[in-house]
Length: 240
Ligand SMILES: [Zn+2]
Image 1 (cartoon, rainbow, N blue to C red):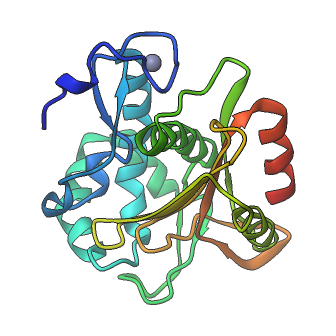
Image 2: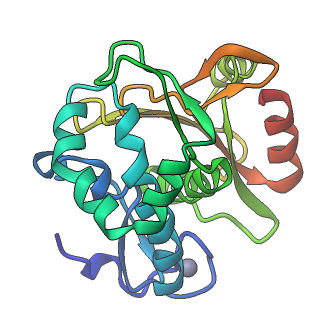
């Protein structure tokens, strides 16, 4: 795929430096080799591309363990061993096996597993993804007083978010990439084009975390909100 059309634009992530290439909004590594065509891309500068890559390497080594989508088995077998081999520190962390609980209902692993998935890194990556999707679908660049913020959607949060989603939107989008590897829906506000909302599932609804107050509850969706800082914070506060 040619990166030419992404050169010399503004980077969607920092909105400061010129882009040098197209960034895959969802890293190619999330997908099996056969499912990497036509993935969303957005212009990025080198620095942002590097920062985002680090987060992607971390998460793509861990996330397939929780996969429940059609390609979960292929993804795990094909890709994870080499990633773990390259990341000895991660292997040590896995052996320590403390952290978030992963909930498998009908996945590859019947028994519960605990992986030290870092929620901050996960959410940081999704904040990049929100910026990338807003640009890819609606050519939105966030302004300096605007931001992208991600959160794990609780049950209550999902209800609240559904409410916002059902309001009038200038545009909506629903996508399924790589047979359920990544599914997402997005909406763009009518009066404020930088205000966008996203609900994203990875790997057929991976379980990210349990709410400590409600141990049985599993969070399978991440939401991202982009727009004016105060508005974004207020929306996220009500959705968590
Ligand atoms: Zn940048």
